[in-house]
Amino acid sequence: MPWLHFTADHDFRLPGSTIAYKAGWTGNVTRAAADAAVAAGKAVRLKTPRKGERPEAADEKT
Image 1: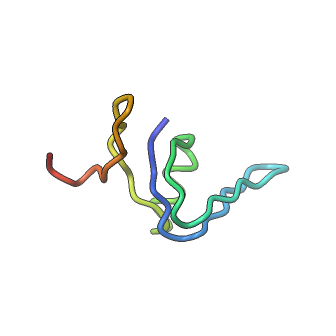
Image 2: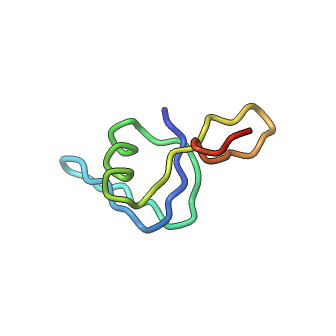
């Protein structure tokens, strides 16, 4: 499951339900939710953090 940081509120709609992601939230989501949020410009992908590390943007160089 990909990690995302939401830059704006995003509603991921499924048949019969909706998952609301709030701006500023960071965490892992399903691939379908990640693809929809990134395509809408409401989230950025993050590299998967190791245990005890903070997530960082996927395009940042380490």
